[in-house]
Length: 121
Image (cartoon, rainbow, N blue to C red; front, side, top):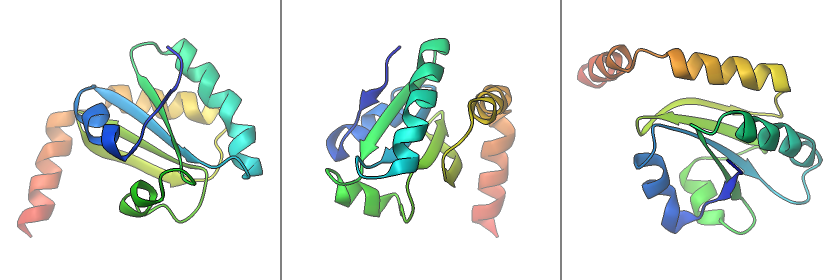
């Protein structure tokens, strides 16, 4: 599956409507973003069960602010609508594959239990 562009209007429905979503926050002027783009695109072809989305921070400043993006590229990963990973900086192909494997292997019942525990305290 190719990467898709998402906007402030489509962000929430994309995250909530899919099991795993990786979101790359980027800008055209950003060198590291341009270097990471082919890695992200290649991974999207290798993992058709995951939604690979891109947010142009220049075109979507309100969405970038809401996501607290302070450095680009920033990669966020959502599983079952829950943010499970967020990290600025370009990632290597092997690092991205390791991340994808880790996200697929997450015990989401455990994640939700830990979230509930954290909110209770």
